[in-house]
Picture 1 (cartoon, rainbow, N blue to C red):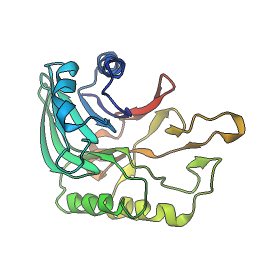
Picture 2 (cartoon, helix red, strand yellow; picture 1 turned 30 degrees about the horizontal axis):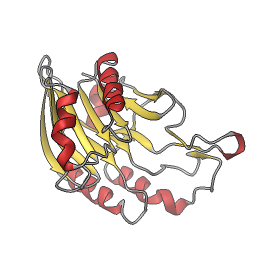
Picture 3 (cartoon, one colour; picture 1 turned 45 degrees about the vertical axis):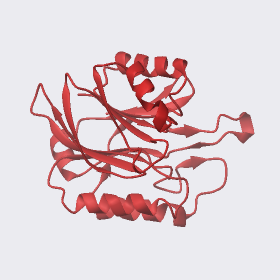
Picture 4 (cartoon, helix red, strand yellow; picture 1 turned 180 degrees about the horizontal axis):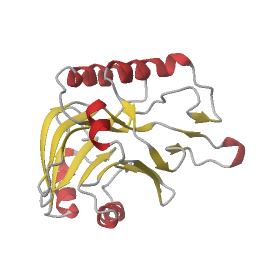
Length: 231
């Protein structure tokens, strides 16, 4: 079972749908958190059909007008049960149909202000309060963990990262070993104006590391446009 998160920045256009299908096929993805889809409710059915009949889709339109988080899973291989959905996260249970692998999985797509991200930390604490299983949290949090998670641009203050740090500590989460790209976001400017930062994360709880400590998070720069991560 391969789980991935991708801030795709829109899948309305046919060429983006083609990229998505190619990515799913090439990497043998079974569960994908597709972030920042920019698909309006009235167009969702049409886009879903383009993805293919062998994929089931859940989108958080009830909480986000543009359905900012879509969860895609290949029904032949996994069973997914959505437990909690909000504007900035979707939490579900995933069961592999071909093995005894099961885990709780939370996809995150955070807002870009400290105040609005408070909802994420509240909901993650709510999930953690009842968590007695393997738990994986991944996605685009739109914030850094430490002040060293940016190169160039405005310096990161401790105030910007302390809420995320405290949430990680309170929920007993740790970073998965990572490989691939050193940075998960780039402004794609030239030379002195270029900025790199880490705002995409893959985190696991103690049950995850007891069972799957050897699994790594692979950070990929997909055709120099959008970053994605695979576990």
